[in-house]
Image (cartoon, rainbow, N blue to C red; front, side, top):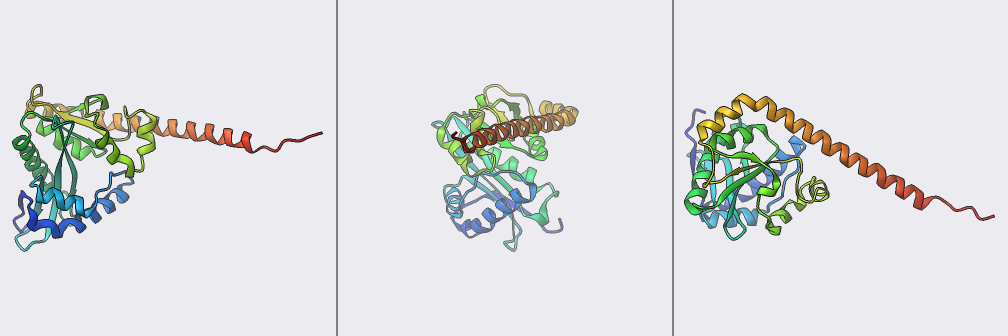
Length: 233
């Protein structure tokens, strides 16, 4: 980009960006055809006021990108959530810079917490791997009900609950400060196995869709039996 992008910790003076951020989150999810846990402008504003968010913008104030921090399980787990970049600035490398800054902010505020994320995007998985995250099962994430309640607004929530919160379309990734690979190792591993990750995601989605179709078919069969008229002779 010709103009310098400023990436910094958000504050109370940035709350006027809240609506454009939540609108873009929703529009982006619809364009990708994926689910998203909705957040209100007030919630985003709160994160800014608490100093638990990172914002990117141009010197003239044009909004570029955003990401925020959520703490769960008595601060034992931290999620870097809601990463979003304005359409005009995508594929510019700014998403990676925002993720790096919010990751560093998480380490500063919660040095002993495990940092995790849920994503359907291969690009985000790649960035996470470069930061030292590893793909994990859902059982290694927080069991805080409040966190999982945030998925209720996602179109895939029923799938998540039908799997007892053990699996869904998102891939779980975790950074454990007590036990993790160096970023260079995970980045090299991801580069070598990115196609494998992609195939894994496709297989995962295919199996979940088959399960949903099977349940839907069984449900229709039961409904048909219940609605069948009885003939009395």
